[in-house]
Length: 218
Image 1: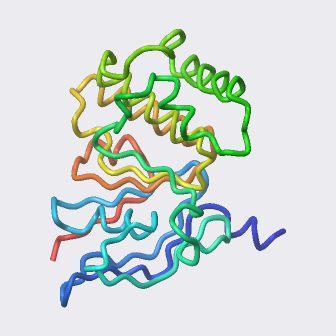
Image 2: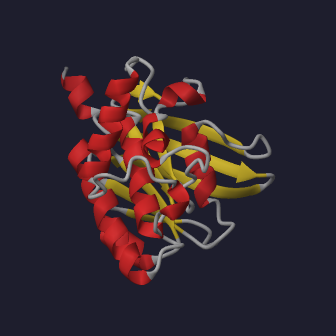
């Protein structure tokens, strides 16, 4: 019990990612539940490769070594679908052929079998995001901020072990960016999720709080 408590959150143990002879990332860190580690650097510096390594979808052109665990569970030993890494990208990636509610419900784990229960969970998530009554809407009718909220609620309902953020605020205007930052970090803290954010924006890092690691500076 004590060992599990001591290992709560995300632990990165000498993670190294290289492309040919060039080392892109070298990082050891611990991120507690509800806390955020920000990895900053310019485009092409290797930030997103770190998320890909943790999520289990790193392009084989890269060479990666090192350990990564959440609450003592070895992520690297698991297949991608079993790692339960919740990911938010620059684009919300909503399915245009599904309603707003179905875009959320599709992420609910399969042990919730009842269609009515899945719809009720999606509707509750929308209400929690301030979007009550939006369930039957076409996602193309939503604003950028509303799409971001739907994407976040979809990730949270998937029961993730950790949250990976790949510059999810970069395409929003200034006002929406600040609102969305606050929403994402507060929801992650409420859910007790360790968060890894990659960004080139200093304002993202300030909003996230926590440790900042810079890459691509050599």
